[in-house]
Image (cartoon, rainbow, N blue to C red; front, side, top):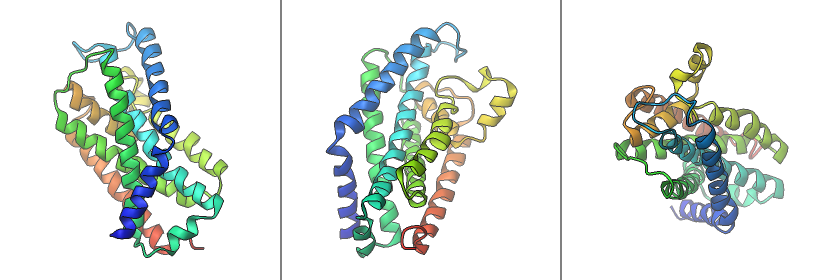
Length: 251
């Protein structure tokens, strides 16, 4: 396990050394979302009875930050290693595919959870948010960072340069996060868009996470758990299979 621990600590230190960019920058952008949407949409959005729009919005923004940063951590690290050529030093180390995958995803989880915690604490200074089902919030927070971190590893395996990574960021992650219910409830959408949202695993991650705070959601937390967990399993299995073959890494 020495190789796994070394790679994990290397990945954590990589984002921590630029924490002003990796942790504080997402905090500023998320607080701006909160300021703008809480002011503009407070009287227009349909939310749960007895829940203010700001309290509804904050769990969605926290989860959105976690998803985006977990993806950015693993994907940017792998692509940067490919572009600079130092990926060879990781590949030559006696690491199994599981250790390789686990180190990158666990480091992504650390960054995602850290950013989410910082955003939540900062937002809580302005709006008091109930935490009615904390276990659900923890479970979905961890699963969501696994999901997004695994997507980042997949993107990093596939991409050979930064503009290819931008394809994933702009056409996969960004639409999935913005169309995931972070800013609205499912029943406030037209039927077509509400149906389309049900195919988005990020929607279930955010809805389950929000349930942990508000005790209310658009779908059952057990349904969300099964879909997010199943998606994590499928993506993890696919990523490990690609790592065993060395696809786009060793060939």
